[in-house]
Image (cartoon, rainbow, N blue to C red; front, side):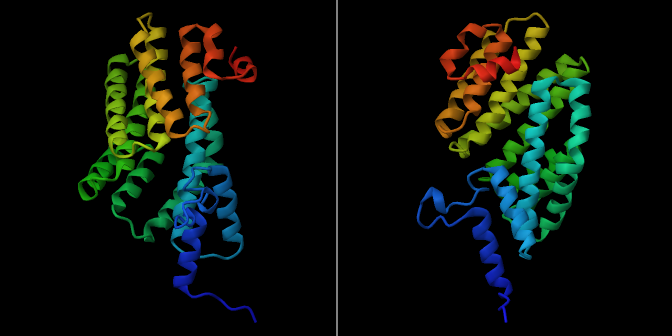
Length: 275
């Protein structure tokens, strides 16, 4: 007869599945979620569900992972068109990623966290309740000042608000939100200096400012240089990632200097996609 592990054993097994075993320091022993390998993490977490693993950590991790997939869908929708078209595309992804993420995160409330307000803020962000998301992130930082992810969350909130107000033509409001987003990402980087996702948010905030000021016929040099500095920091934090070169290349495309993209190590396939 198959022996059913006790609850403590199941929780340890689930946590190793999600985050891996850091005792050896080996990349191969680290979990996909810890490495921010979200497609692989999603596959393993779904397999864990199929295998009958049942602990609060599993829905929490699944919610985080599905949320990251939705964030990627948001990013790609902006790249492909933005505005009303992007919002329409995101509606198509909601049943696949957003709605399951919200359900899983709600179940993940049973996980013991240093600052449970962070989870509430994340749920509020995905529900587009931006004021509540900022409020919960502030509460999380009051309880756990080292939790740089809460600053990153605030950066995401202000970036979404900036893009929405920009698309409505409310440029002064958009500038304020862009400035706030940059400030929050910069604050996060003082604590989580090795986390490439902090710099990805920072670079995206600057790239979108390049886009806005260009469309308004204003000088783009300052925002362009800031976007590229942030992109370089992505590459330093995650040398194997193409996110830094891609964001740098996109800033260059917005500047109209396509001929210089080759300097950033981005191949013809990427260039062809955007020309």
